[in-house]
Image 1 (cartoon, one colour):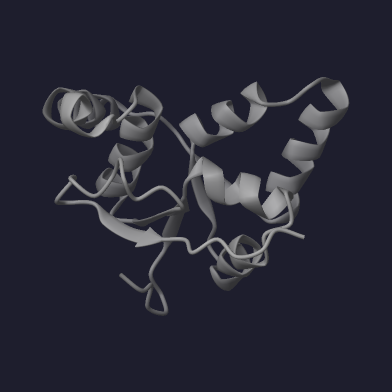
Image 2 (cartoon, one colour):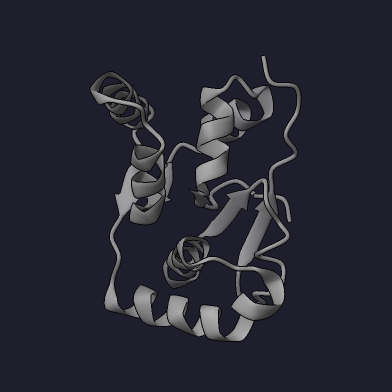
Length: 137
């Protein structure tokens, strides 16, 4: 699926990590969307990967500088994520964090962009756009 103008994207954690590592494709995808959104799960995953206060600060600055909105975990998102885990987890390898991110996108009517289509392709109601990761500089 290609994102049309005016469609809001929810970025998966891997897209932000790829951008921070220098992927031109990830950077272009992020900069293309003026209304940048992530799930609170993505924020937690990013913070979990940091190696100290300085890196934690860099992650927060990255999100602030690019004006990412962090969407909260709601009861509906939690319920939908649980349904996804029951329905798709065993057969696709879908993990809880990915289920929360996918549920956030579906509940918000957002297109989800990720470099990992494998876990998400079974979720029929998810509008998904694969990130084609190019060369990392």
